[in-house]
Amino acid sequence: MTEPVIRVVDLGKSYETAAGLFPALKGVNLEIRPGEFIAIMGPSGSGKSTFMNLLGCLDTPSMGDYFLAGENVAHMDKDALAILRNRTLGFVFQGFNLLPRMTLQDNVALPLVYAGLDKKERRPKAREMLAKVGLGQYAESLPSRISGGQQQRVAIARALVNEPRLILADEPTGNLDSHTSEEIMRLFDELNGEGITIVLVTHEPDIAAHAGRQVKFLDGQIVSDQATPTREAVPAC
Image (cartoon, rainbow, N blue to C red; front, side, top):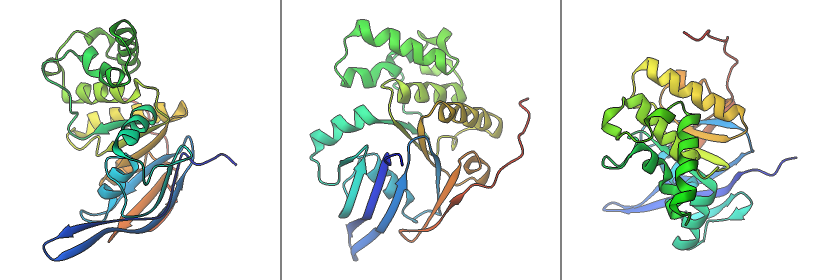
């Protein structure tokens, strides 16, 4: 059987508050295999955002183990985490997080800067990723000159530029209208069809329906982990 790209064992995270120690995540166990498309769901305060921060190596657990691509990252230092994060993960956020004074090409190339590639190598790769998401003609444009849906496509191109094994998407359609959201989700479907593992946080059942599996959190624990019911194919408009 294929080795999981993500495996967490008794993973927990607690925070110091004025009222004392607050357990945001309580002994979570989960495996995600290469090529899966997972939707993480749950109400505000359920622990899903904390869980995603741990998966993204943006925070460290208070207890338990986290194996990313076979490496136990739970107790790595910040430098080692940054290297692994840049090499293995791609991030897509609700707010796009594009730098307004940089061209789309240069925004997409940013992870390659951190990886140490020179400009001659960065620019062709960034253009290739922009073309992949249908925006190759806008390489020299600024973010302000394109729509919100196109900005999210640029953010996805940036997430792909280092050829990560895994994409973590946190409410990637949260700032988009329903039509544009569906376009973005079709792009995620295509990427998953190419074998990229995707873990996506969403509050919306219609967005979660694109995933093959839905994991629901409540009070810092997983309360449901099941396959998504098969939907009838909807013709593209």
